[in-house]
Each structure stands twice: as C-alpha cells, then as structure tokens.
Amino acid sequence: MLDRALRRERPGPYQVQAAIAACHATAPDAAATDWAEIAVLYGKLARLMPSPVVELNRAVAVAMAQGPERGLAVVAALDATGELAGYHLLPATRADLLRRLGRFDEAADAYRAALDLTRTTPERSYLARRLAAVEAGLRT
Image 1 (cartoon, rainbow, N blue to C red):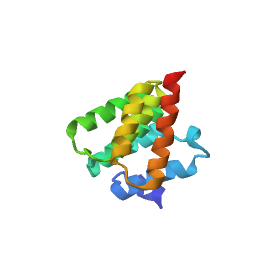
Image 2 (cartoon, one colour):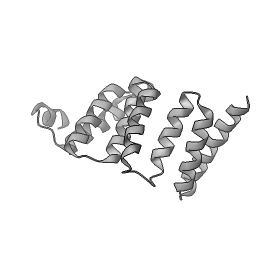
Image 3 (cartoon, rainbow, N blue to C red):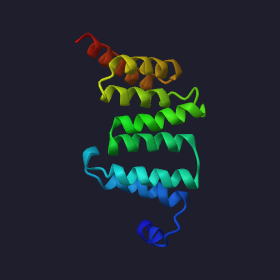
Image 4 (cartoon, rainbow, N blue to C red):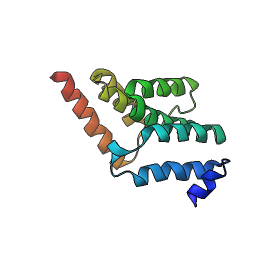
C-alpha cells in the first residue's frame, strides 16, 4: 500500500512517516539502514508538517548519514530557534553527537542539561550511564 501511495507522487505526512518506518523496519540493523533516505524523508515531512521534533529527528538521520558534525549543525540551528527549550531530547541528542566526536567535556555538559530536564527513571538511568561514560573518557 505504501509503494502504491508513493507512486502517486503526492505523499502526505502519513505516507512519509510510513516510508520512514519502512526504512527502519526493512534494514537488518542500524548500520544497514538507509540513513540518507531517512534524512531526505524527514526533510519532506518537515515541509509537509513543520515541527521542531521532526527537525530534531532529521538531525539524527543527518548525523547517521553524513556524520555527527553535520547533525550538530542541524541541532544548533534548531536550538537557536528556542522552540525546544526545556525538551530533554535536544540536549540529549547534542550530547550523543558530541560523544561520537570525542568531545567528552562538551558531551558531559549536554548530558547534565538533559538530566536536569528528564523526569522518567529509565531515561534518567540511561543518561546517567552515558554521562558516567563520557566523564570516564575525560580521565583517560
């Protein structure tokens, strides 16, 4: 059904979301995922249904497809708008991309910011583990 809807060349937001999900579902693992296609699809979704959360998801896909520095640029632009102020996944995303670049001191600061905004126990535990890992990286 998705292929048929996309062939009409006028996909709406639900078809684009389904295409993103299909990219994830058909890949055997994260390494084999077509991140470039997902980034393009998030760009289309952002045009159809502008949302700062969609843009944050696009930042992750861009980072996976083109490298963490490119994803950080998208995160920085999004952060500058202030639309996701107080949303823990913005600093959490920044932290992960900084960690991947080996910028552990900056990553630690971003993980702390995400922890300050996070209320659920599982997310707090995950972010605390990541923070401990980058802090250990600072000492080595």
